[in-house]
Image: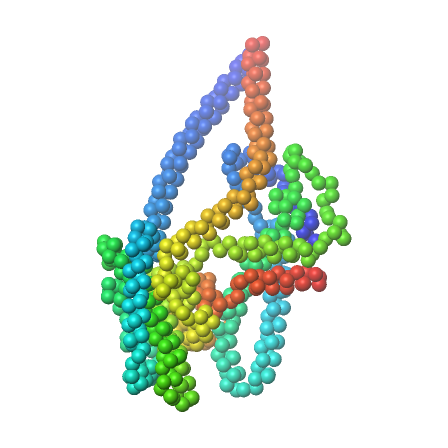
Length: 325
Length: 232
């Protein structure tokens, strides 16, 4: 009996020893896990910082703005005033020069598919300025570049380029508005001529939006929403008006934009060739063609209503459907 | 909608297994698979989308018949692809709304998202598990859901760049970053407040401690018995 109990006791002690060892081991492994997790967290933080700098270029700007808030606003104002004065001078040209200005490159405008023609396009000033930000930058961007001289070469895809595009777009639009409102009346043109000029300027603006969007995508500004320009950058253009211009954009350009967007967001495996070939083809092909982000681009562009009214409508529809059942 | 007023029932054996295996202080039991407890089935969503589609087709037909112009018909054809893609986007948006409604509906269940208390729980039980039929007001329920949806929608966490951030042709980075930060902070604060009850509900932990204590007492008793029998 004693032997049996002694045997059992030994066994029990052995099991206890094994369990203790296990606990020690798990403690050790847990400690190593914690260390690994800490290292990973540090790496993640570094990565996040890199990402922030790459995509937004926000941090430097914010710090700088906080330091120089007061001085910056005054310089900005004075520079903006100068820009407005320049614009006013430009808009007060003679009749003939204006007419030439408005009907620029009519033939190239009609050819929507020829993207290379944009070399002469005013927006290209914007993309050139992406390469030489010092030349075209407005006050804020200029000062931010002055203060981040180390990053000048890398920061071209950051915040500076965005300001350049924005300012050029707004200037061009202001010019367009001035032409529309004031100068067309002075020219005393026929209705047909007026219409022609209006459509030409509208086409030009659509092209401009396209070029600006392309530049923004290439500059990797706000990669999560490259269509930032549609609703934000078009200073003084009403959202509805911008939507009209965007809806006039040709299918080829739209596809080009999506292609670029997906390329820069790392989803360049989408098949875009079928986009041009068979536009009216089956749903399946379209689904293959566009990834979710591609759909999002269109989603944003076409302005599907996602406001509170649409939510209310949907809930109401569902409730009536359930009520009926 | 019949499922709305029946409580969620969890398998006690599964929960016991979770109690045994998970570490004390872990929060795995916080996560609930909303798809498995959805009240409105996916068919309702599909049916609704189908209805919308047929309605839109009818509307487009009536539009095209009223216009009668060949040019307009061609325009419509050329925009067909575009419209299809647009519809796809709408489906995605509607699905997200549908899922949100489903989540909001869970609040009307007798024990909410948590489900019925486990057999070993000392939580108070409800005698009236299903509501009285005449007291159910679907309209009122959907008003509450609507309110929830609005609340979630206006949160706007992860604010995107908008034209409102442009002042005299310049995008205000500082303001943008500030608003983003604020919205994120609001989201986190709201989540903390809304989920506070989960952190104060120690049901799971209590049961876990009880199981552990039981194991320890058993171990102690066995050791004692062995040592006593050793002396005999």
